[in-house]
Image (cartoon, rainbow over all chains, first blue to last red):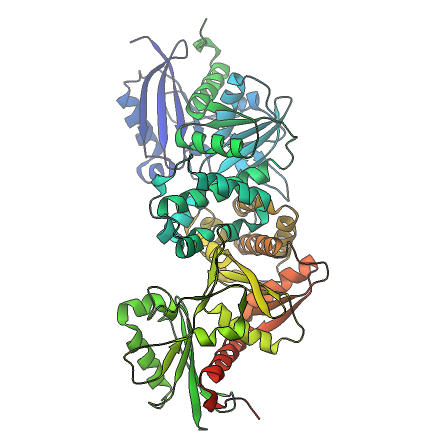
Length: 311
Length: 311
């Protein structure tokens, strides 16, 4: 195995991903688990990290760079936020070293929009964004990072001028599990971006976004009156929430303006389909690559001697 | 006690209300319980009704008129729907008698909007609406019946031309109990219509209704960055959802047009405050009175000999 250079970790609320990185930016080994912040609060952050480091046989001296909820209040150590307007290359200098550990472990800060009327926070996505920007073909002004809490970032000359969180993924989850629509939706995994009901829901909510909480109910009334299938009900629910998010987030996007989509797998397919349905140009950057690349850029800033970049 | 004339029942999904009605429209006795449809599906509809009839000592010969989920699929007997455009005085003729019962028990149908794109259903609110229209001072064209599933009805010359359901109450419930906002919201009962945060949220979402799923998240980011209290977070969540509903439902209301609000208690106070905040004239009809009055009108149609009306 080539010599490892550092360890990169994306520590989310409910997931953990670790990469053993080589000198030239290669991934030498990976370890993933469901032991995100919520789980680590019970079992202890040092133990969770140690177990994953052992899984990839990481040498004792190897430094670790971490982004995400490990730096939140209630995380391992609180790393605070870099305030908007924010230069993304400034997040590395906001990293804090975890005290009392022989190994050099740094946790990156989040981003905060300290606005009375429109306060917002992110933690983890700023690192993904740093990586995405470095691989983006053109200079996008609007970046979409979909997920449990989708983040939409507005950039001006490479500086984050503002951002907004849309609770799309979590609303999809709580509505399909805990509301009256759960009976209509049944299996959320049946969601297919190619279902025309998904595109119909996108178009309908984009036309009248104020009716979003009414359009949701049509998953049920459509089932009662029109025999809407469970598969179509899932597509309707997802299309309504994703369509409302895009309608809200692209309000000030100029016509023909491109959205940079940072996503992977099914989420990428759904949002690509949604953008296409609404005639909004988009380019996709792989979300997994982006966060690893962002962690690598931060590591290079923190530890210049690593010289990870391919030569 | 004056002689009872008939029994009126509003049988919801999770609640049951029964009134023993006198000859002149007076309420002689009341029985309420949490044994709505979901509970009655387990214990049996006849048993639930018998228990409440016994609680008010209803004579054996007294007829019973029922609206609500008892007539749904999965209810006591399925009573179907009256289709829009619908005359409300037609719902009585759509009532079905429960077979195999010595007592004359009738269950009213719901209303259905059989539209491919905008299907919708109601069950119980049509009876409330019938009662509300009979007591309304002026001839309103738009009626708001807030609740778990708020119903907004458009009327043309006393005929229901269309309606829409907004999942406001249920979304408030699932978001405040099952989402990340539950930590910020804590006690949903702390909701106060007079809280300025409620009015602020109403105004903000009315300005940009497409951002509703983003504005919701500010209950959390406001707590993290601005020290938003749990009481204010509840007001923010409620104002956002009610504001989005009103923005969506009053889209085609002409300026100065009045909304008839059929509500009671805290819900009436919240919606009155919301309408006032947005400068929309409204008149309130008590929801409990309305459903009882609607059941009475239906009873008079079904059993003309009852002569319940005051002379």
